[in-house]
Length: 347
Image (cartoon, rainbow, N blue to C red; front, side):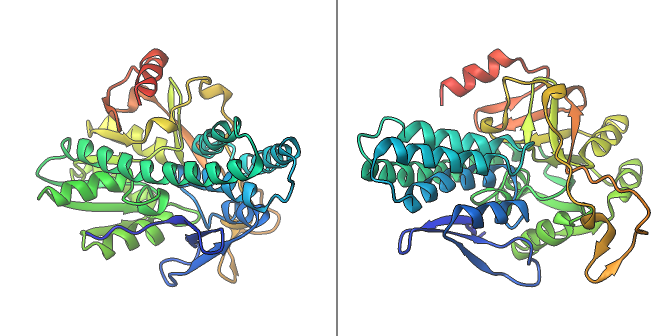
């Protein structure tokens, strides 16, 4: 099974290169990003998306900010880099990994003796973030694969695959690892309205790998659970607090249905996705533009006079979660803050 890198640092011209996810599955296009403004646009437009991938993008974003800044005075240089960091951080308020990646590289360059050293350190640390993310996804995949029956049908929502990470994936990493281990896994991918990340991205990834995948409308999932078609649900996460999992809108609906039908509901996510400082009530749920709901292609499907609510994420209480699969082990709720802090401290 071939691994596809989602985004990487191009040392030949000091730029970020990435797969433009808005063009899939029709066009596979590698886009080059040389400015912070272009990176902000890429994140806002979901050309780059997925919690771990945003963490890598945040890390590379600081490397890019360090490269493009022409200040020779270290204090002035750091001020510019921090300004760019805050611009990047504001693009996706719900996904915690973006800020995590930004903070990690900022912390690494803070003690640099000069600008040249800071630039080199930023690039090295960002590349380390990407490498570690790939290794982390493989570990999550192996741990999660052990939870799946030898023959099973798995429901997943949105895209938590290689496109949402540096490569391999979290939820899809579990599926890939299970298939590699010889298990017979079929996947049901929810289309994931309004931007169809399941239909466009998850189906593209799994089809490319030769994994059996069927796309359904989001509202079909409950019917399949009731008719005993689904053996497990595996999703990713954009933020996990001590009381809730934040993931693509619609995740909570699947969790409620899975709980009712006694189907295991697994969340696959790295420890960098855990938020030990906030609870559900403290987290901003991102709302996106009306046009994502009202239009598709050149057609408009909602009357101009009708209001639209377009939440990007929802929160699933942890009592609906069977287990959270991390790179440090499989955690079963309730999950205390002290446990997460201790796991993070041993990384």
